[in-house]
Image (cartoon, rainbow, N blue to C red):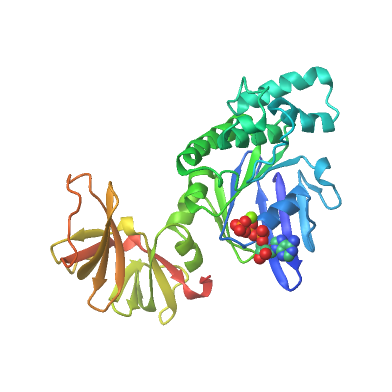
Length: 366
Ligand SMILES: Nc1ncnc2c1ncn2[C@@H]1O[C@H](COP(=O)(O)OP(=O)(O)OP(=O)(O)O)[C@@H](O)[C@H]1O
Ligand SMILES: [Mg+2]
């Protein structure tokens, strides 16, 4: 049995359906992420799981038990918010003790539980500090310790790192991965940052307009996006729209205006005459000064370097074909030891293996 099961859940505000018939289940011990753009319904979904808001339709089951009518404090669910939400007039220890006192935990046990919780978040020795004496990252660790101290079945984290600077964020991401492994509590993590979602999660639900567009492991979301929306939202992706003209054995051809025939692995949902998109990650391309053609299992397109962006370890080259299609490519600089391999205006050949592009049928366009 799944730890958490969400069945046909909906929430409307007036005419606005913010959570639209979502069903999903989450296993015990998972680091599960809800990822999507601002306003897609992530916080609304989380609030219903926590019990701060009630659905208009559908059910939420925890350990097989329907949570409808169960108040937040009676659910084995705790939430960490973006803005720390520590009690400013209480010390770190008092903050962490608060949920234990609410649960009538015997006084004799509270001290040890506080110490364990502080140890979990690497803040041993901070018990007597006041919230204003802590850095942002430390405050957020106390908020997490306070949420974990009652050992909930489920910890909900709503953009908990978004107030932190980039470097601290990365450090906290690594700590969160370790913490979740250590305590073994199921995490549902909300973010609109795709890199964060890919780095942290066992599985990701990509949300768009109140619905789940794709639910998968990070590597599958990245390599095999189910819709144009997912491909576009997760990292940088070339999207070549066209018409399927041929399917033969394992290979299909898509006629793309401005490019011509693009070869890809035949997709089960591709039909000759139908519309679709080839999604191609920039790092899956190669760029060379030599114009090549007629290689069976590769695509080759010639064009000119229109723009480049030196990023240290890698350089992004935007290559424009004769027909005006822009192909974004990404090349590592390290092997060569030169800051750039090409200049704007250079004639180049862009190539990628037939299996590097991923076909998305128009029917599933988001
Ligand atoms: N109490 C409310 N009354 C009316 N509309 C609401 C209410 N709460 C949320 N909404 C609307 O529901 C939609 C989804 O909001 P929600 O906060 O769930 O988005 P989100 O995915 O968490 O976005 P963000 O990434 O910006 O936090 C938004 O359009 C929002 O304006
Ligand atoms: Mg939100």
